Each structure stands twice: as structure tokens, then as C-alpha cells.
Image (cartoon, rainbow, N blue to C red; front, top):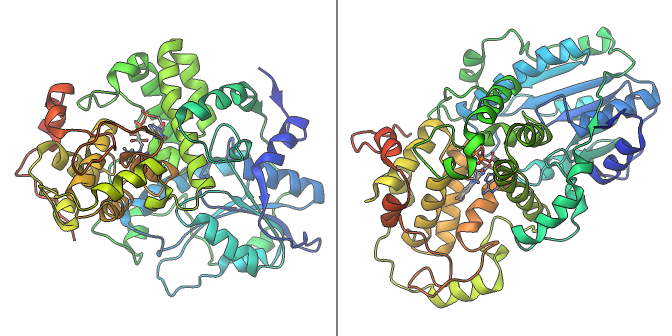
Amino acid sequence: MTTHSLGSPYVRDQLSLRALPLNEKRLQPDGEFVLYWMQTTHRLEDNWALRLATIEADRIGKPLLIHHGLDPHYTHASARFHAFVMQGAKDLAEQAEALGLTYRFALRRRRDDDHRLVDRLAGRACVVITDQFPTAGVAERSARVAARVNCRVIAVDSVGVVPAASFHKEEYAARTIRPKLAKLLDLSLESVEDRAPQRAMPDAVLRSFDGAWVDIARCDIAREVASCEIDHAIAAVSLRGGTVAARDRLHHFASDGLQAYSERRRNPSDDVGSSRLSPYLHFGMISPLEVVTVARDAASTAESDAFLNEMLTWRELSLNFCLRNPAYASLSALPDWTQRSMNAHADDERPVTYTLEQLERAETHDDIWNAGQRELVETGEMHNVVRMLWGKSVLTWAPTYADALAWLIHLNNKYGLDGRDPNSFAGIQWCFGKFDRPFAERPVWGTIRPMSLARAHAKYDMTGYLARWGTAERQLSLS
Ligand SMILES: Cc1cc2nc3c(=O)[nH]c(=O)nc-3n(C[C@H](O)[C@H](O)[C@H](O)COP(=O)(O)OP(=O)(O)OC[C@H]3O[C@@H](n4cnc5c(N)ncnc54)[C@H](O)[C@@H]3O)c2cc1C
């Protein structure tokens, strides 16, 4: 396989698709460094923003500073997300040191602490390069910073294997994006040799921001998280964040579950039947290129194709949806046939309804649903099969379709370590008919594909799953 250098035409072509200027401001030649403001790509390899920042730093003969910050006020800010991100930051600090990169991590503990560190850094930078991400408020935050600061700000896409800009319009379904991805896949998987920028970061510049960053490589993460003004009722979980843990999980999966993925991923009682990489992919702690490459090398074509159908087709379809459809979090993102169905069935009597609070506490009549909710609350993860049943059921249990959508987004994004992702919105909207076709008409469901919890017992092996998560005595400790 070809390996390209950072200065190669291949890298230039990729960046022409992946990099998007967020303002019209000029590069500041008197700036002291190039700033890579890391937001969602928490890795140092296969990171296109870091690549552009390195190229720019060398082109103008300046050092490169990687700044990564964590604030207390993102939606659903909690000990769970904070711990996961900070564990990943510890890996980043160690890897950066070994690679000769200058990486610094800032923790804003309280809401009224200094919140303009990025502005102060940008005020001394030649150019700011950051990550492009359509959900979790990232695009909006980047746009606000780009409007405030005096230098050029560029957002770079490292989310998908294929540059998201390759698809100009919203794709209709998996079947429409699949052949387009297949054509671009081999080209997108070519490898690039990363390297550190030529000029070292002067200590004096770093010292002038003294107190801005924490010593993440050596700090006590639990203690730091405890000091933050965030929701501590949503506790940290045993799953460790970071590239090292993500790679362990990938290699374990490649040698085990992947070998019979098409069958084993349908079994909720099988712990390693799927990769369980979604939290790591969400935070960019592992490169999707690496996941795809390892999977293609490790399994038969049939099994790796089945995996790529999720990892590539559905993941990049979800990204395309959130990038190209600004209404991705609302029912108006759904196709016409679904709108007609919802209008026709809005007033159908719902035989069973629950409140959001009952759902959150896993207090429904159904064991599988409650088990899925408990898994989500306690571990930040939920098996894919159960997640589909979980989402579909709420459609019929909430008083309105709009409530169902809002409640699913709330529960998914509050507890799921992989929440607030393009996949979150695509997965939830799929429950309402997005990317799907009409089915035979039924009460409440209308023509949206129904899924029955009652039939799930016969269809899936739920024994082990229910033994673990289904105990009625298990009390959820919610705030
Ligand atoms: C109601 C509902 C909510 C969902 N919320 C999320 C979410 O918040 N975050 C999230 O990443 N996924 C979400 N999904 C999609 C899917 O359930 C998870 O990506 C998958 O279960 C993660 O487990 P895994 O990593 O073991 O997947 P694997 O089967 O090992 O697949 C590998 C990767 O492919 C991607 N992938 C797999 N299935 C899908 C899919 N259906 N759509 C898009 N990408 C997929 C994920 O990045 C996943 O990590 C949701 C699905 C539904 C029905």
C-alpha cells in the first residue's frame, strides 16, 4: 500500500475536501504559533486537523500548540463523560511527549472560571485549526470563536473514512450511499506518514499561559473530576477512555467476535459479538481508518463486509444526515411518507403510556426494555439489538411522536458514552422511519416499521442479557 508524506498531492487533495474555513480573516504573520484547538478528534494519528496544523506550522516557520479543553457546561456534563475524556487526555499527553508534540489540557472546573482561554490563545496565534463535527454543539461553538477572534479559523473533518464533503447532498438511505462509499474506499484508506512540526514550542510562550493547563499526565483524574461543577449522579464507569483502551478493544474484537460478526452481533447475551467501539469512535479516540483496516485484514470477506456495513455505510450515512440536514434533531427531518403516517395516527389511542421519569427509572412493564435502560444508565452502553427495541417502544409509549423523539434524545445523550453523536440522531430517527420504507398500516405505528418486545424473546437469545440487567430488584440510583 502507498504511504504518502504530509507534503504529497494525496494529502493536499484530501485536505481540499476536509478543510473548511470558518471565517474570512487573514493568517496573522506576527502570531507566535499555529494553534490546533482539539475538540472532537482525541487522537494524534489519522487526525486531519493535526496534519493541516503541522503543514501550516512548517510552511510559515512557526511552532505548533495543541490545546484541548474541557468545560463544565456542555449538555449533560457529568462525571461519566469528564472521566472518559480525561483518561483519553492522559494517553494523549504521553503519546504527544513521545512524538515531540506540544499538547496541553485545560480543565475549567466551575462555570464562572475564565472561559476565554481559546480566545487568548487565538489572540497570539497565526491561524487556528479545529475539528469539524456536526452535533454536540461543536459547529456552533467553533463559529462563535471564528467570529470573535482576529485570525483565520479552519475546521477540518476527521470523522469519517471518506471525506464527508464527497457527498454534496443528503443521502436517502444506506443503499444510496453504499456504492458511492465503495468507489472511494480504497483511495480514502491510503496511509499517511505523520510527523512532528519542525520548530519546537518555546518554553517562554508556554510559561506565559501559566496556570491555564493541568498536568494531565500526572494528575489524579478522580479528584479533578470531583472538583468540577458537573452532574456527579451520572457516575464514571469502569470503561476506560483513550486510544490505548480503544486499541485493546479493537484487537480483542478482531480476533473474537468479528470472526462470526453477522451472527454474534444479533445476540444481546454475547458481550463481544460486536466491537463496542462506539464511545471511542464518538470521541475520536480511535481512527475509523484503523478500525476498517484491521477488520478487513482480520476476517473473511463475508464477516468484514457485514461489519463494514455498520462501521462504514451506516456510520457515514449518519454523518451525512447530520451535516446535510439542519433539522436532524426534529421530526421534520423525516421523509414525506412518515409525516403523512404521523399526521394520520397522531390521535390514535396509546394503550400504554409512561412519563419520561418512569422511563428514566426503568419502570415499565417490559423486562427487556427495563434491562436496556439499566444497562445504559449503569454502564453508558447498550447492546444494538436492545437499543432498536428500546427506541421503537418509546414511539408507542409517549403521548406524542414529538415527546417520544425528545425523550429518546434526552435519555440516549444523557447516559450513553457514545451519545450526542451523528449516530445518536440517525439511530433515533431510524426508529421513526428515517432511511426506511413504509410497512403495513397499524394503530399508532402507522406505516412506520413496527418492532415488538413480546416477539423479541423468541427471536433473540435474551437469557444472559436479562440475567445481567433484568433483575426487578435492581434499583437505579438516579438523582
Ligand atoms: C435508538 C438508537 C440510538 C442509537 N444511539 C447511538 C449513539 O448514541 N451513538 C452511536 O454511536 N450509535 C448509536 N446507535 C447506533 C448503534 O446502535 C451503535 O452504533 C452500536 O450499537 C454501537 O455498538 P458497537 O460499537 O458494538 O457496534 P459495532 O456493531 O461493532 O459497529 C462498529 C461501529 O459502527 C458504527 N455503527 C454500528 N451500527 C450503527 C448504526 N446502526 N448506525 C450508525 N453507526 C453504526 C458505530 O460507530 C459502531 O461503533 C443508535 C441506534 C439506535 C437504534
